[in-house]
Length: 109
Ligand SMILES: [Zn+2]
Image 1: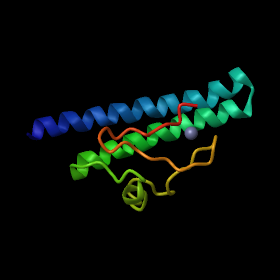
Image 2: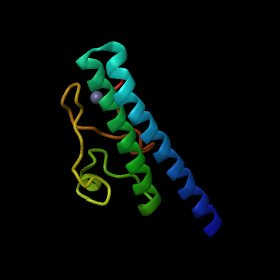
Image 3: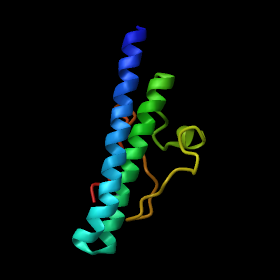
């Protein structure tokens, strides 16, 4: 039991590292490659999606259930989003998740 919990925690760390690297790459490479402000916004949206899904995974790991679909529960918890929930830089909408998978709905810009 303890071993399994440790293994799961480590995989979360790996996911966080991957998302962080992707975020850095996206913010550095994508805006230059397309030289468009829209592309930078799309890249930022993808980073936010990844961040929300990671935090939702942590919430699920800690509480045993997914956060509310509108993210009101997790968004109010500074342990997960100390700077508040992000909104989509492309269309300005708030993010929602599928409460059966924990994945952000839409935003396939
Ligand atoms: Zn978006």
